[in-house]
Image (cartoon, rainbow, N blue to C red):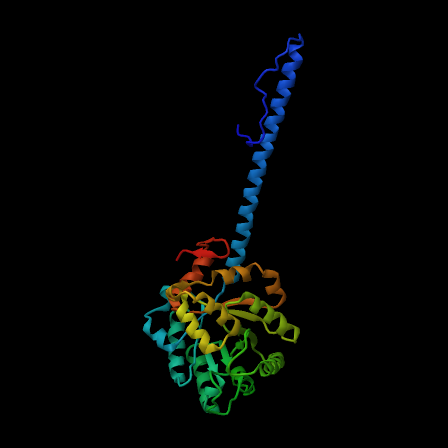
Length: 354
């Protein structure tokens, strides 16, 4: 029998008494012993309940973390996709893989990549960069071929990097207004979101554009969703979702997160995307040169978002998109490790075994 150290009661020592009522004294001693045993039992039960509650709390958070990552999507460039023999070696079947369309790219490369991804049992979702499309003829050929040759149903439309416009389309809305996506049976259309603004468009223009996109989504046959630019600040993501929804947004939101990558890589991509608060966060992390070569995982960010489940629901946040800046295999295996529950909580994040 174990007891708390401070509870010291001398019950084993018989009360010395010359009185004849020895039976009463023994009964009193037994009563004290009973109370001591009861206190010990209560103490042990209390400890058990505390540990059990802590275990349940951890389990509760675990489930939320798994839940937020389920159905995650990834993205890849045609160049990287063609270097990998078979993406399904490390990516689960039916996972959505967005295919980038960078300035100067040939859309035929994107078509071939979409076909490859479909053949490997995954779900290709090509990008359309409005300012990089030279003509309506090229747009229609692009859409008709990805739909017909790769059975594409989901896409992402962005304005495009930079402000240079090489054709008739200045922005996302001008692409939508062609009606070509509905014509070829595109059922799910993604739009870009900017929790920390964009170097290519003002905040005022972003707000105006989002209103137009919402109006268009009400008349289109397709389902619309927003994928945010990657961000390292959970509060910035949540506050942004609250703000745009208060301004009339009704389109569901998918949160863009940075994948597993070296800090130096994250800083490089953040500079090119012009993300503010996240850039300040990365600079602090990189104040020690040794940190620049260390691999970073977005576990703290994911955990903070996961425990904000009610805010996510209220503001239409419905999924995670991972930008695999440090390699698609690392990011995919990290995310899949979470879904397979191969992780343990740490003080403010978690560690994945993959």
